[in-house]
Image 1: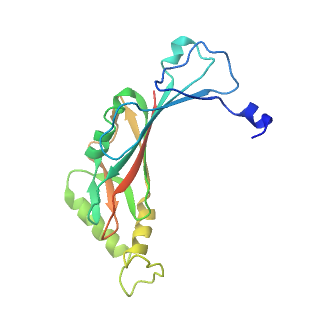
Image 2: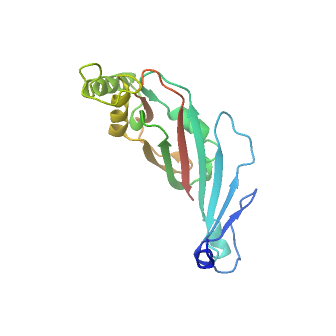
Image 3: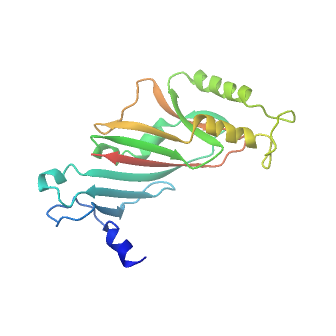
Length: 207
């Protein structure tokens, strides 16, 4: 990187403990302070916490600096169908979520043969009927028109269903809780007959 590019790049500082920055000299861009979480986490996941604070902000405003938290959750392999995963998601972010009074939670599924959606959490028949709809809408078997069948007859249909529902969700955070409707729940829709564990990156941002 040449000297001109270095001069334009924002300052990036790392620390084992993150505190709001206050009283620092003004800078052309906000400082980004990041640190790896020092406490152990259960299960196969990683966590990164970040805070963004304007170096020119007065000390009183530093307490309202935007906070970030990021966690990768690994869910065990599920059978084909739609699965309610709200309890697992909330459990994995329960230590970070109360720190946000107002913000957003972004969930990103790192796979192309499963999907995420928000729908009914009460009656399991809704999940069963949704799987029926997907299976009838996207055909499988020898008569299906697909050419991509490297991993079996459910291969291409799984990719199509993944794009139909999508791989990400954004949910508001209010007073340390996911602010969803009373009947809403987070679904993991598994579109393969022989699934693998699924990874979801959860990013929290707010104040």
